Image 1: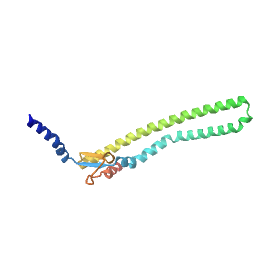
Image 2: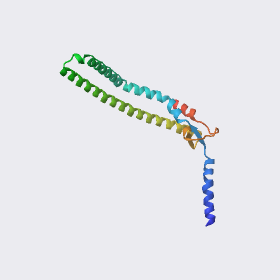
Image 3: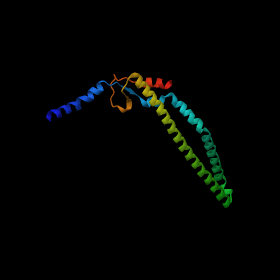
Image 4: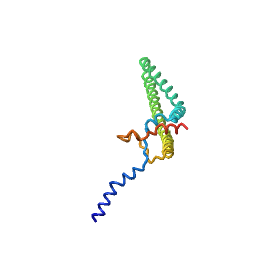
Length: 166
């Protein structure tokens, strides 16, 4: 019984070392890759084109509301009470509609940005997988995830960037 226990302790202590001794490990900087990926600019341009019309419309609407508000403030003293009340209600309705449109716009931009980030993440993952397989790596570690990385561990960030550029 004691012999079996010693054997199990031996295996538990030294088996992981032998497993990692045959492993090939590399490091990548995913923050850098996601920030500098060539696809990121295309994604930004796609989102900008998709939402530029609504953004311009909101800007024009906001400017119109601001002009009407300024006009109301400047002319309220010369208006009758019923005119001032009607104008104020109309302005409040326009502001409320503007705020709803603005909120919907922001939600749509955020949703589409997340979708595009997910697509970019998949492309980056494919590039990382391709580099790892081509180099025969068992494991790639994110630079920010490891508190210490020896200088002998190869950094494959530029190889992943080159793969993304293809």
